[in-house]
Image 1: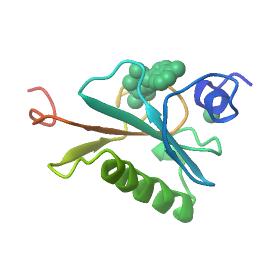
Image 2 (image 1 turned 90 degrees about the vertical axis):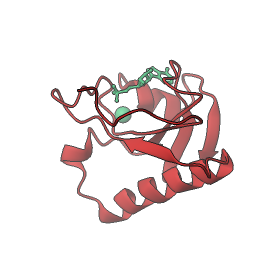
Image 3 (image 1 turned 180 degrees about the horizontal axis):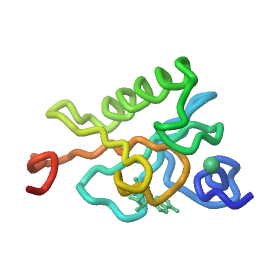
Length: 111
Ligand code: AMP
Ligand code: ZN
């Protein structure tokens, strides 16, 4: 299995787990861009938002991100990011939501 996040889901590679259920795993990003930076990934391999066609799984991902925010007490706010494909800057080809927070974030995109 060559997909990095599939290997993390399978337990072949370590992660700092934050939360999981049957469908979704959430773990700390290895190179945090903010005080809180967690990745929420489907346990089943889906390449990106572009390929996502499972409505139930889409809901699971969003609700998992909300659960992560509550577990990490991000009540002041946070940001969800889904880098998608080449122009979106996606580096890992397994769908993931970034949950970023723990400080007042700057503008959504650098101008
Ligand atoms: P993206 O550019 O949206 O594909 O983001 C991929 C993210 O995965 C980056 O923020 C990386 O720091 C993160 N990442 C890469 N390898 C690992 C890993 N082994 N464990 C946790 N996060 C990782
Ligand atoms: Zn995968």
